[in-house]
Amino acid sequence: MDYKVILSDLAKRQLDDILFYIYATLDNEVAAARILEDAEYTIQKLAQIGGSLKICEEPELAEYGYRKMHFLSHRYLMLYTINGTCIHVDRIYHALEDYKNLPD
Image 1 (cartoon, rainbow, N blue to C red):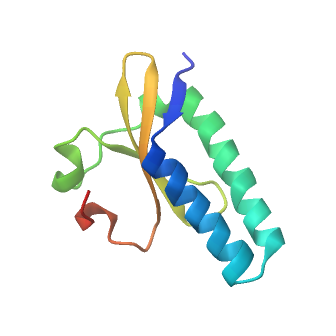
Image 2: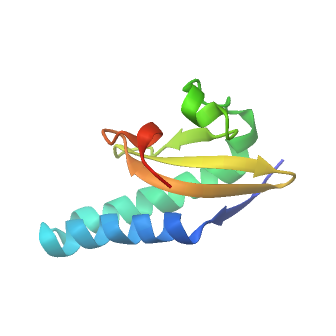
Image 3: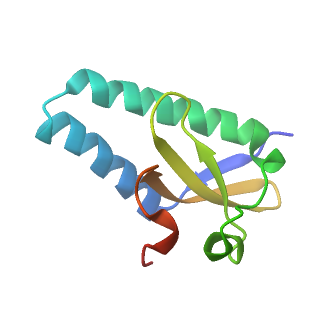
């Protein structure tokens, strides 16, 4: 079953911030493009397999029903919930961030 993947405004802004930092601050256009491709690929895979991934083990995330999907080639992840046939990506983080304790 394929899901419809919806990125929240916050998730879109987080992805934009990641790409802008790599493109402008680190001056690495190629890396930014590759991360964008990886994000797009991850969203496509999420639509296909998102329902098969378990709810997060971290209690702080599990209480909201969050699941997570890691990017294929980069150290980023998406936190999402499922509602019927829709996957709602609420946030996108670097894997080294303390994402389970970050404020709303």
